[in-house]
Length: 194
Image (cartoon, rainbow, N blue to C red; front, side, top):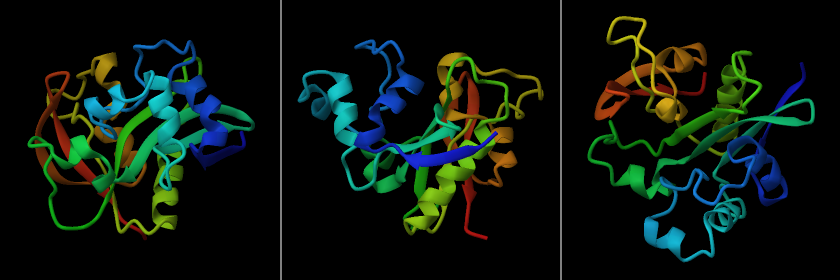
């Protein structure tokens, strides 16, 4: 398999949609809630238009993983400061003053899951962030190992990822949060340049 990762720019917007919203449903997630306030989203004719606008910004909302030419994964990654909801969160507070980049969402396209694609997707997202000056990359996954080691997360919360998913991509736990996902604790994991 020949994997490659590219920023989700406006030229690649249809690939992004094919991964996160292939049926272009108006109310389906467009990965907006952390990047835009509800008022900002409402200023657009629809959620897809708001997502298209994010793709034109200097730091597009994330990166896409390709298997040869087919888009198979999405990872939302930008500076934490460009995520108003995360920046204002009382549940996921910064652990220090570093201007980290944050992974908010990891999605593997339906029909391509359980192929080990999350690691190359996360690796590519981290490399993208480091290439753009990120001093560190953080993620806020659920710690499903905290319960009994067999706890599964609800599919509606799967986008935040799991502790083991980020450990496989070289992240280490550096803090805790007051947030929960599927009733399980969410933690702060970080990866720094090697």
